Length: 378
Image 1 (tube, rainbow, N blue to C red):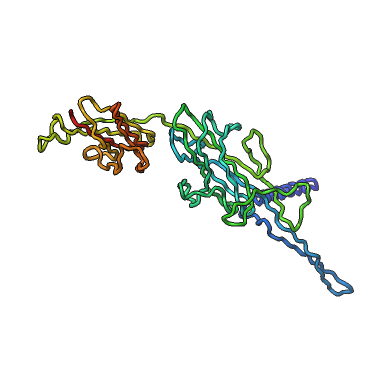
Image 2 (cartoon, helix red, strand yellow):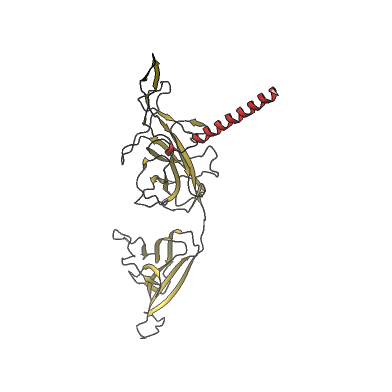
């Protein structure tokens, strides 16, 4: 009977210990915002009661005071539904998106750097065979998760509160030519001093681990433990990286060019002009891109004025198709590629080769553009 009673007591004690362990684990899982803020002063005074010759007495201990130290940590991840962004040759302001979350028990700044990466740790698959041009990094200033050129201009994270997060964009240009496949990039984040809005803090320096804890000093302790992308884990250095890539997607689009001729006047007929010597004829080149989500960049049209006709100087117009070929024509002299050119399209006529050249630039997915010029029949 005694043996059974002792066995029951031991089992009950084990259950109690297990219960305590579970409670401790739950407390450790609290968020950064629930953690005591770095720099908070914690004080404690004990009291003692005692009796002397039947008289109750009391006294207090000295007060023990210390400040809470800074436990530095954060996360940085690719935040775009995958690590790869589909881009086209010649695309400008191509964006990869990341998210930085502050899990420190205090407000922090974060320094940002965009790097061309070889991805030695296998976090992104694919062959890295080109570099992006004019690579820059910007913070999402209006928290809409979308890069807004001219709006998102800050290049560091300012005053990020515990548990708060913000989107960060790497923005660059894709080379316009070449047999290209993929460019790998990474966002390098370094934790920095916070506490002063609209001022970039300096990179945090941890407290020397060989020094004993100072009760009245806020020690800085790096608690991060992540892979910094050089093939090994750099433990607790206040830095982190996340990886993404620009991948050349569609290499061709359903681009068609339809050419037509319309007699505008013949000098004889009042209506329904004919193709008579001396008549003015308008040639129309209608460019359509039937691929909805992919633009055709650097579109350039060349046409040779046919024999038995003469080019009409200053007659090239470029714009939105409609009416007699170009509904919204250029208000500039598109025959001249000079300092007065502001509408983004240029054209020229070579009187020696009889060649009409029109540089219309980009025809967006599902878009179209028209180029027209005139000749007279000899």
